[in-house]
Length: 155
Image 1: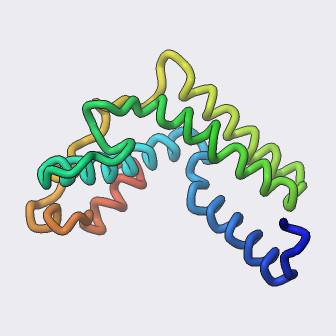
Image 2: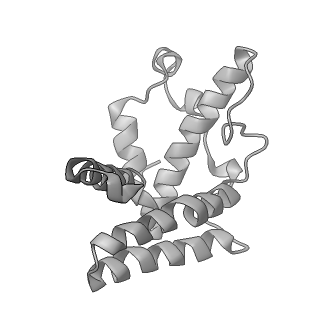
């Protein structure tokens, strides 16, 4: 039980929660940033799925371009992971700014992904390996300049 933990252990748990919140924080950003990050993340997922397929391995969840509904995956991600985590963070950061700037944005983004016209669908996700030269793609990484272009919206 949490009450049996030492102060150091509780502190480590809170720090871990905040780090995870930072890691997935793109979901609470304005929709254009969320859209770009969703594309990048799914490019990585789909590239992994393609490599798994080529190696004859089972394709990991969310990594099969032919099966994934991007908007549906974002709804599940927000509903089951991001929003509950950020509500827990709000327990520690009780400011109105956090509520207005983050939690309300998460709810708005969730509504967007649930809409009949979400900003990204599977066809919007480029094939990572055709986006890079073959030597870089074979290593599974993006050239730095391409990452900057994707983040800044210069696809």
